[in-house]
Length: 278
Image (cartoon, rainbow, N blue to C red; front, side):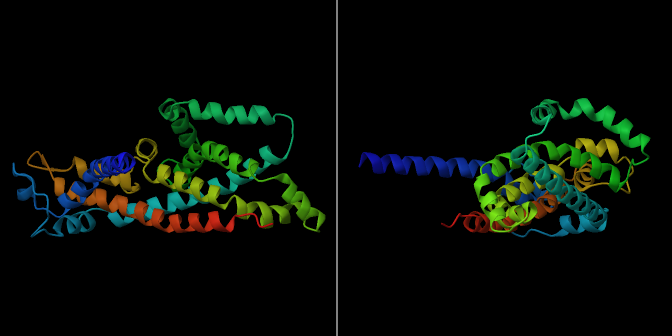
């Protein structure tokens, strides 16, 4: 009875914590369907009965939502592909080869992660401005790749190091080249690491605001976080349009949720497919 009571208490505690964590998300979605008059009432409305989609129509029709969405998708796709390719090759090099400067390279990766991002804003701005890439897809993509590559290398290094080198050597004895051994043996085993690293890079780039506000000063070229900032700054007689702000927040969060749902299935497949069969 004592063990069962402890299990029930632990489950109840977990449910309470989960409800506290999920309530702000629910409140955001709920408020996005409410009219400004309903939101301004002193009595909170917990269920959007009689709600409206007008907030979503306003933020999609009266603002450059689709242009900002296109910009964010392209930037994330470029940064994600380039980051995964470079990080995988770098993790493979520092895990499988012994070369001069290897420890210095690994130490540099750690030190770069310790630097606050705000400390490099001026240098990054001057560099991109000198290249003539301000307010451009190429400029912000370069900075985002440089931002997420170090930690991605560090993550993938652990996954590559966890794969026994004997497996690759056995494949090369059977006739595979080093590249073929990596493609057929190592790559399937580090697939969960690639997925986890991709999720980290996607979320970090998709939600990034500070760098984008420095590099993308033109209103015609902006990512979704900057678009959401513009909505929040708009006001009607000094009162923020909370319904539109919440609707914009939901639209920004939906792609992240869809991406995670898709990747979650791939992650499970990678864990099962990466098992070593004897």
